[in-house]
Image 1 (cartoon, rainbow, N blue to C red):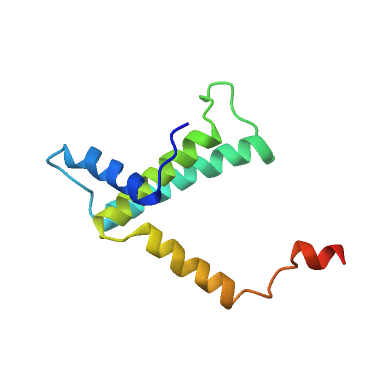
Image 2 (image 1 turned 90 degrees about the horizontal axis):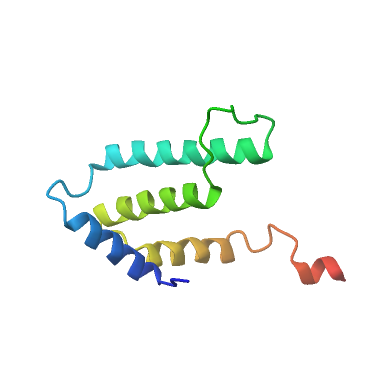
Length: 112
């Protein structure tokens, strides 16, 4: 299995996009692409776990593939805006570990 750091994933996507003269889409177009990919992921989850079965004519997609598509677009969006996703994740985790630290029941507390 190919294990990469977030930085390496961002570099891989940047190398891929960099070979095309069109480059990254505009932020608004990227947001539209992200919304489209999220919709495709939502559709797959709804078919698999929800109340809406697929039509017999619909192509079977995997949740893994749809998550991959969404991740690719998120990385493209971040790269186009020069955002370091490692840093962005660190900021979010810091927020969760401070502001939301007592919001959920920890496993240790639940076992007592």
